[in-house]
Structures are given as structure tokens and as C-alpha cells.
Length: 112
Length: 115
Image (cartoon, rainbow over all chains, first blue to last red; front, side, top):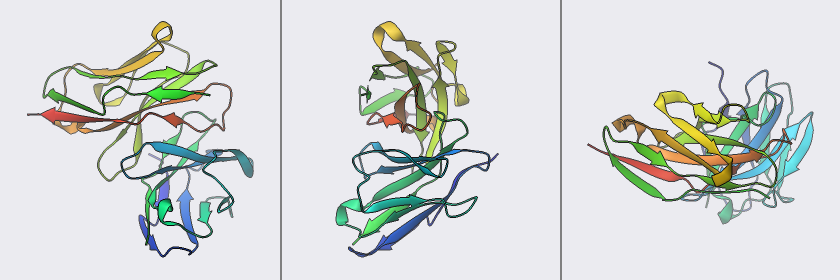
């Protein structure tokens, strides 16, 4: 069964450094999303991407964040200058027609 | 704006007993509703979805949920709990109009199964 994959599973970085989280969505899906889950809190929407551009973004998704689909398979989330409060689990999701979203296993980001 | 409220951050049931996890939503437009399950150290797995067809929705692992518009509810049930059902369960809503919209999640309910 096709699934969303994410790398790395765990990323440790120092405050102020840039990180790139990578995702490979399900191959025939057209909509892509990033979410985050701070430890002990609920899952929060960050951004959606369709037709090679951002479709929707939450207030969390400020100028330090960016997304890209550099080729036909990868979907990346870049955090430009990490802060301690960026420590969270980051989930990528994809959807064929929108709405029904399938999630990857997540990348745990730890900022020290 | 839409929101989801899950009553009970922790629910404990005995193995073999009925599981009932509550979810209420608010949405200004017809919603699509979902239940996801998260096992320890894993991602979110889609359990079931309501997308304006049948109001009683059956999902994986014996779970089902009923959409009740009058009560703005979408409670998740399972007739007989198994130990393997122990996990975190999230209710989520999205409005039916926007395919690229993000899901709005509830805070989650931790289901504990007592032997």
C-alpha cells in the first residue's frame, strides 16, 4: 500500500541553524501539507501546497518557514533560523483530491 | 472558522467493553469529519471519514462513527475494546469547500484499555 515517507526521523539542531525536513508524498496525490505537533499538544496545520504553490497557510507559518517541491517526488519544509519553540514533531500529509489526507510517520525536531 | 472539541483527555475502558470517544465540532459550512489514531511514536492513521454520504460511517479495526448534524457531533465507537486499541485518537474537521484547506484537530483522547 502506498504511503507517505519522511526523512530524517529525528533531527537535532542548534538554535539559529537552518533545517530542511523532507517528505515523499504518495505518487498520484496532488495536495501536500505540513503539520506540527508540539509535545503534549494537538496537531496544528502549517501550510498546504497545490499546483506548485502555497494554497493556504496558518498564522504559525511565518517568514522563517518555506516549502518547496524541488522535483516530481519530494516536498520539503525549510525552517530558516530555528528557535527553541520550533521543537516539535513535524508531519507531512498528502491527498489525491483534497480533504482525505494521509500522514507520514513524522520528523521529530529538537532544537537545542 | 471551525473547531473541534474532544471531551475527555483520557478514557479508560476494560477489555471487551464498549469504547465511546466524543467529538463535537463547529463549522460555518458543511463539514467533512475524520478520526485519526496515533500509536506511540508513530504517525497519524486515518480510521474513518464522513464526507456527506451515509451518516453512519464504518472504519478500520471495527470502529464506527455517527454524524449527527443536530448535535454537531461525530462520536467514535467500538463495541468491544481490544488491548491493541490503546492509542491517542484525534477528531478532525475540514470544510467541504476547500480541497487545499488544512485539517483542524481536537486535542486528542488517550484511550487506555484495562485488562
